[in-house]
Image (tube, rainbow, N blue to C red; front, side, top):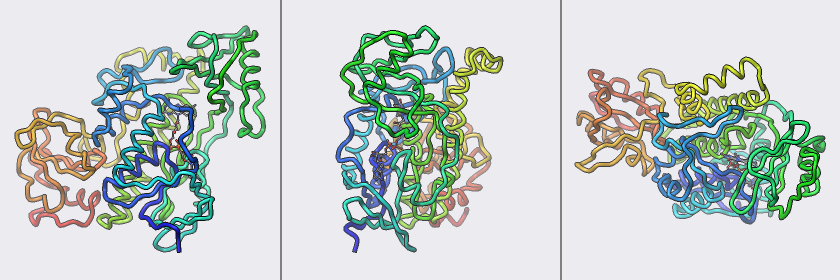
Length: 479
Ligand SMILES: Cc1cc2nc3c(=O)[nH]c(=O)nc-3n(C[C@H](O)[C@H](O)[C@H](O)COP(=O)(O)OP(=O)(O)OC[C@H]3O[C@@H](n4cnc5c(N)ncnc54)[C@H](O)[C@@H]3O)c2cc1C
């Protein structure tokens, strides 16, 4: 007998695991998180949410509170270009990056997950698991077992779940490593160059600074702990003088390896976030991609667990997010290559493209993932995140994103001709001044458009879209 039975076991309480669990619980699925650490670490890795993440979180009413707490910056972080990428005019309801500690985002997501009934078991490391026809049984380091219908590895780049599932993680090894130290010191913010042109980067953080410096001769075991002495020696070597580093809060090492899981799904085992992809630290994208994965998977897995959608819906998670992962790896590697290219002609060309307002906008959308479009073909809005336009519902002004707060698919009916579809999906009769060439739109719970009705097309293709994305529900006889 297992010590606990649940519908979905999520390994890891990082951004991916917490948002995924909250999404599953919102849909009424019994969800448990097993997290290796007894408590959240005292240091903070990431410090931003990008425009795409804010757009997604807004579909659950979660962006507003975070935006009120954070610090808005009107551009997207990028590596290798002389200036930032302006977000003005890009396809987003949030044309800014939000400066906010990753730990704070995790706190907000954890509070939501708990509120919705997720059980979070800390100090529970998933060591291995066995599969059966109808579930997965995970062995926890303390000898307990947890049985679930599905297991999702949100357990970071060194994912035990990915390795135990036998999912390949092809890619490229790191060519360089950098040391990171959250310390106090007298160096000015920004890059400080040494006599041979190499630099130490100093990033301001609340009450301390983050030092980043390339590491000469990294140890063969990259898990060897970084000491203050090691970081101090490297900083002094690069600067050619001694600058004292004090009060270390966090010392670490990272590299530019890029790897992508071969499959995001292996039967009843799935992967999300860093467990599915690692990439160079360019464009400050990791938390954001983790949230994007979780948002894509949550409603699909919930529908399959609840039996309203067929298993095949889970394969669209692999199709959509593996393709997104390929783009993230390509984008981050390209940024590093751009940084290293110096005065190469192609790099100069890219910088001139970025200096052009239209080029700047296009790059900002590519690098933040705002250009996300899941392959569905047809109308230009199909597969894209529907814009958060103002709409009027039952005489009350609201926004499209608010129609998705409950996490259910919605057929937005702008003509009143689709009422009969309420047997299959929630139909919201809305008025909008901004969508004159669209009569109706089927929105998936993640806000991506799954069907678009245009003048004269009636409900052609709607039944197929409903069956594909919602399941085998009754559709009107006229369809
Ligand atoms: C120095 C640094 C700076 C960064 N800056 C940014 C930034 O500015 N913006 C940005 O978007 N991203 C940034 N990132 C990347 C970002 O931190 C990660 O991409 C993000 O945390 C991934 O989220 P995740 O939920 O997939 O995994 P993680 O946050 O790694 O969470 C995985 C969780 O799983 C737990 N776990 C591991 N193994 C097990 C197991 N076997 N059983 C149970 N639990 C387990 C871990 O303890 C952890 O809590 C940065 C990363 C680093 C290292």
